[in-house]
Amino acid sequence: MTADREGTVVLINEMAEKLTGWSDEEARGQQLDHIYRTFDEATRDPGPNPIDTVLLENGPVMRAQPRLLIARDGTELSMPTTAPPAARLTVPYWAS
Image 1 (cartoon, one colour):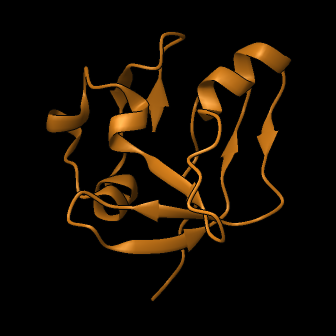
Image 2: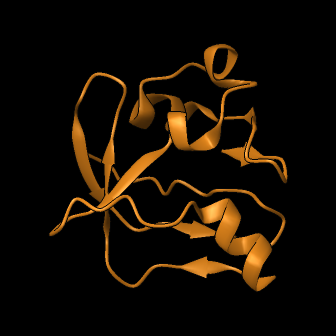
Image 3: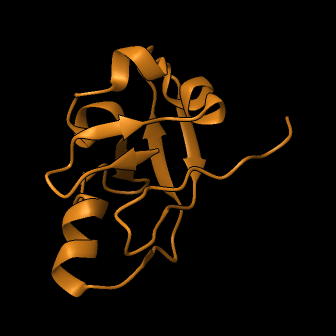
């Protein structure tokens, strides 16, 4: 996924489409936190938006603990989250 400095989705790739349940066309122009909804697995706290953290710290976000991604259809998936300083949110790929 790629978002601009305001957190607006610019592009999502095929894997992100599968994981989030949003097509690239549907996601473009939406706020990242609406498309990429992650929560602390234990507390269900949404925590900070990765884009906000990148801009605040001027560096990459590397979450040590996996986050719970909740897709558009309610499917939940445990996954790590990274966000490089270019304000891109990277959704890793796992073979299932």
